[in-house]
Length: 193
Image (cartoon, rainbow, N blue to C red; front, side, top):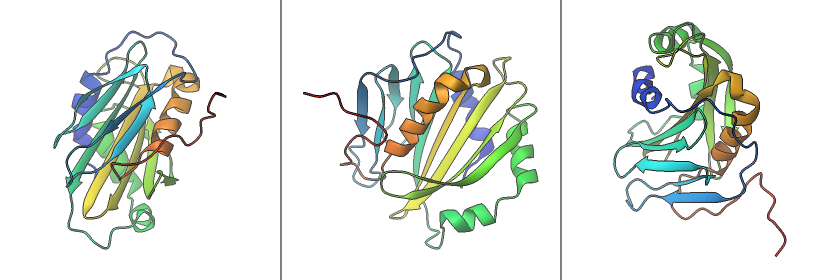
């Protein structure tokens, strides 16, 4: 389902100042699809700003750090697709070569399944030694199929800020839903009232 060449626009928008980010979000933002044929709920730290959406990709950028995620929802006809079948069918060499065209020196570091709020997704990640921004980056890719729609959520961040960025990426992934009416929050303690 995922096309590695689609990352170029994601990288173009990632050219942010290389400053440390907060490891934990104090407030969250929620973006829900208003299109009944492309439902989703994306929950993310309020230090990120959303753009796009509708029937195109929705991109969220951190306002002061090199972290960006992009969500794409498309109609699919493969009713037999499952995360486990997709994982079993991954060709590491082809995947590495495809991403390496955009992210020089890309190496796959892990793959498996991960949980969204309401669905299991295929996930894989890898690091590059270079990027169009002239820095090493880490890519975290997730995808699933639900209700005749394919959901791809890619997050990319400067590898040197992995300690700060990865908890935010994990929060975004764990709280993503293929429904437009999902609630928050997985992996977050609410402040006492």
